Length: 139
Image 1 (spheres, rainbow, N blue to C red):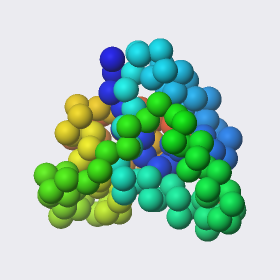
Image 2 (image 1 turned 90 degrees about the vertical axis):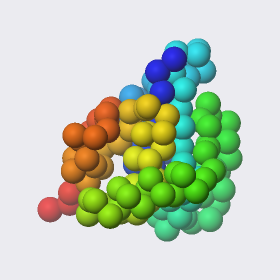
Image 3 (image 1 turned 120 degrees about the vertical axis):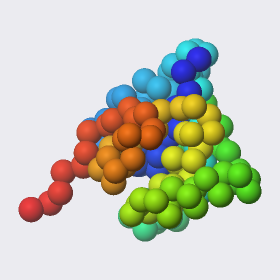
Image 4 (image 1 turned 120 degrees about the horizontal axis):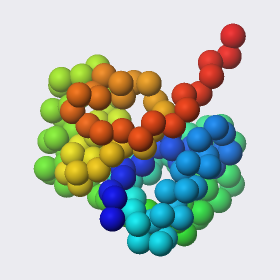
């Protein structure tokens, strides 16, 4: 089984049916068939929750989290070791702290990070990525 860590970016793309949603859905199918294993840090779970609530309100957040609970994703609690690894990434790279938990979990699991967030390009030398399309900026 191929391990993947989902960044909140991947789940938000899926929930909002944006470019890359089909690739994320394909990973869900592979995980359901035992061909992949999907992880999500508890910090990134929280990131999904607040992002959906900000954009679409509490009802949409509850619906998204209920759907997330049905998907073949293991939500991983934050241990001291994971927190320390995330802190070391934050000390080394100018990236969001929540993203550091995604990286730390990928390192722990020997997994590729699934994202389209360009911020992660800064750590490509250390972690493997499955890249989704980047969101287009409004001009």
